[in-house]
Structures are given as C-alpha cells and as structure tokens.
Image 1 (cartoon, rainbow, N blue to C red):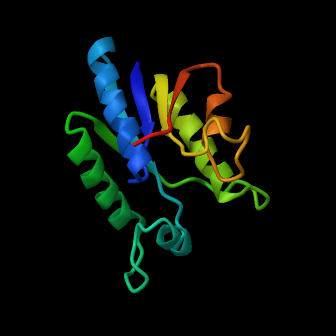
Image 2 (cartoon, rainbow, N blue to C red):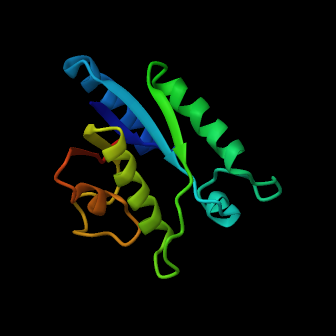
Length: 147
C-alpha cells in the first residue's frame, strides 16, 4: 500500500505532501507524489508551471514538479501522468480526476492526500478534483485545507 499525493506545486499540494510524510512514518507506508500534467500549454501557463515566453513540454513541467516534490519529501517516489482525452465532453479537471483515481488503484493507495482550498466550503466545486476523487470507496481521503 502507498500514500498517494496529487502534486501540482501549489502550497496546498506541498502541505499535503508534508502531512503524508508525517503519516507515512506512523503507518510505515511509502509515498508517491503524482503530478498529472495535461499536454496543454495554456493550462500550464494558467497554473504558473511555465512562463508566457517559455516553450512548453510536459517533460520540462514534470522535471520541475519532481524537483519541488523532492524538496518537500526526498524519500517519496515521484510519478507523472498525462491524462488521456477520452471524451470531447470531458473537462480538463475531469480528465485529471480520472487519472488520479486510476493511479490510486494501480498503486493500491490506502490514502489519498489532497490539497484543496475548496474542501468544506462548497459541496462540489466546479474546478476541484477533491470531490470526485473522494467518492471512491477503495481508499481513504485526507483533504488539506491549510498550507
């Protein structure tokens, strides 16, 4: 079993990774930091993953995410995935959520730690992966709301 932390470099994802590290010591479990990186330059720029004048590549963003995750949790393993666009009707958030859930099952995650500023304020925020990821009964979910 593993503790899975979706990681996007935000303060809340760093806090979630920190909390997972503390929990991993208690549970004697490994940690996987997961970055889900859509192959979309505009999305990457909106998130501050690349500068406006910088060439976008998924690999470059993944390298940055790996460095940031390692600076927070050197013992954690790092994995990145590019979500498949399986439906023209699915939003980027839906594709990211699906990918997180798939990886949680592949990794046999016991707990998913999610950094989300929307948790507890809105029952299902439009732009959050927290609610759909938390619907899966196969693993527990810890929502981190404060960095």
